[in-house]
Each structure stands twice: as C-alpha cells, then as structure tokens.
Length: 211
Image (cartoon, rainbow, N blue to C red; front, side, top):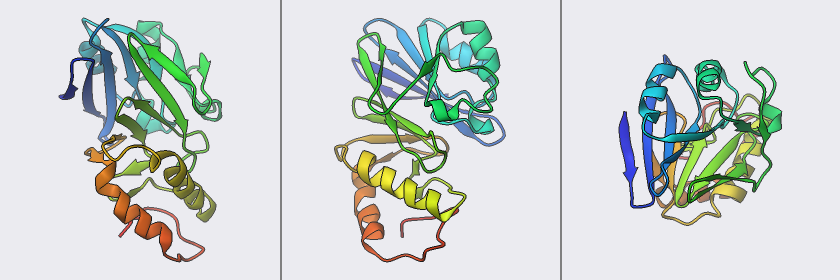
C-alpha cells in the first residue's frame, strides 16, 4: 500500500494486488471522507481494510479483464455500492453494472468530480478516470507505451484514444496505470508525438513501446 497523493483536497492510495501485480486505487475526498475504488483486481480484504474510515460511494472499472475484477464480487457484496463502467464492459462481469458510463460522464465523490473518458483499444469499453490532474488510465497507457492490443485495428484505436483524449490533457497530468509505476504526461508527450508522426507497418499490435 502506498499513499501516492496526499493533497488538501484529495488522497490517493495505490494497492498492488494479485498474481498480475495489478493496481487498485482508492480516491478519497479529504473534505468529506467519501471514497471511490478504481478497479478490483484481487485481495478484497486488503481493499476493504484501506477503505476503513472512509465512506465508499462507487466502484469504477477501467475495463473487464480478469486481472482487474477478481475482487469485484466480494466488494460489491460487502460494500453494497454502485458499480460503474462503460456498458461494453458489462459482458463477463461477475456482477451487473449499476451505472453505465459514457464519455464525459462524471461521478461525484464528496467535493471531487471524477470525469470518465472512453478510451477504446485495449478493450472496446476501456475507460480512464480523471480527478483533477490525476488520471487513472487502466491498461490504456503506461510509461513508455500504450496498453496491449490484440489486433492492428485495436492498436490504431488505442493510439487514436491516446492522441485525442489523453494528449489533450495538461502536461502536469499524472498518469496512474493499471500495472506498474506512474508517469507524468509531460514526460511522455514527445515520444508519443514522434511515434504518431512516423509511418508504421499495417500489422502492428501487441506490446508496443513508443521508441
């Protein structure tokens, strides 16, 4: 467990959980104690432990892959709070969505506004969640490259998502990915722009790095 942000308005806790070392994030409004869980990879008891002393309001999923939803059934059962994600991610979930998020929808957590960005590519319904200057990116973008894609069309789509939705954010935006370390958008922009400007082979997909 790491407290990665502890500002006057917001506290963010990162939990690295399960066999795939997936990240779950707890976002807390300092003014009210209301909290949001972003992704539920595994080890529900650890997530519940870190939620103590807060008022959980929502669980938000970046996407529906098993390494991000392993603790979902138990969390829903014990917390009894709404589950929010893009409707395209509803297939294969152990519980049904309560809130079907569209691009630019928002969740309110105390005095925090969490904006949903639809960023398809890794999955059709992948979403990022923006809280001020903090972006919870799931498997859409990592330090040094985009998330895994299973086809060239998916790769083209994830690049468009990053170009249109993420590169439009301020350079000081901090990206918290679904695995591994965080990065600042300003540290990624040059290599992403260079990659986009270059021609690429039509069959490109899989695990790709910008440079």
